[in-house]
Length: 401
Image (cartoon, rainbow, N blue to C red; front, side, top):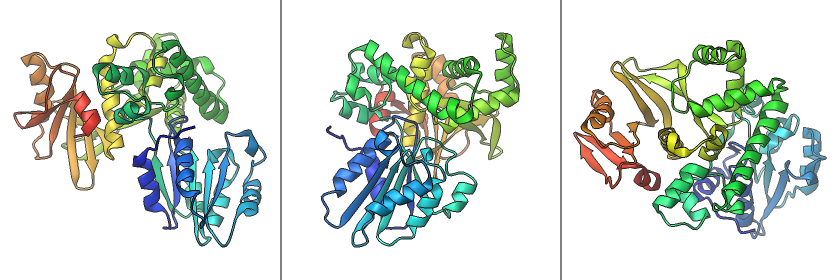
């Protein structure tokens, strides 16, 4: 199979090689972590000084590797002292006490370790302590719009953008194509069901499957809206589902751990502090969000646009928060080292009233950091509106801020 390289991630991996850091590719299932490993293998296997040891826990060939002891035995049988060993372990969380193996081999000379996982808690707490904090996480996301065009061999057109916003960016869509919506629906439903079963239901021994499904559909329908646990419980009780705040909070954590959704905290711009309640929620892939929500995209296009902007801001390397102002909210505060940017997202700005609302919130922020409005307003070109930059969604997805 021809592997399309995702240079963004390969460059990050190559940067950390030889620095005694465990390289950890994290992210939702089916976003392409395995293919990034295969791409890495293809780039290094021709080097006579390299020895690649690859364990893929999604393959039956490695069913016998269940514990760290099994993993040690397999690696020992393949390890070559006279070469540079690259130890690659795919879906490492499926191996009991895997961190003991990783900690041991990290100290070997001429050895690099790259692991992947589909659970955000696999390196938390005591596990992080066991491997000594010597690791670098790389978040692998579903395809960006530019990657979507490359993978599907498309030109940048309205139809291509609509396909991306409708079907999302899971790399596996290359196999189904994007012409048959029934096949796409089957594939996306299959991915969703696998995530729910393996990463949530089985992992956490969930029994109330009906409520679990209802809750994720609620989140799909309220993308980008401020959500407190108590308000969610109140809504669900109104629908005849009497559940505790503890249960809703736990299930929300499970969805987040599996990278199915991503909570975005509020940031009080004036108080300069993070508010730990009333998060916004976004999905790790637009296509999965759409298949869960059901219905037609015309009715919720604003939610999809906001989700797409959020995902791309994260891909650009920003830490993203939701901004809380005295006069209202700003969709996103984006920060890097010594850099901050404010981003407001709108669908169409075609009246003065809409312009005042969307640009006005940014004008109320009294600092000199760059401010942007991103919209799908037809024929919009990058322009300056009273010091605020207006960018079309397509330009943003192609070229960033």
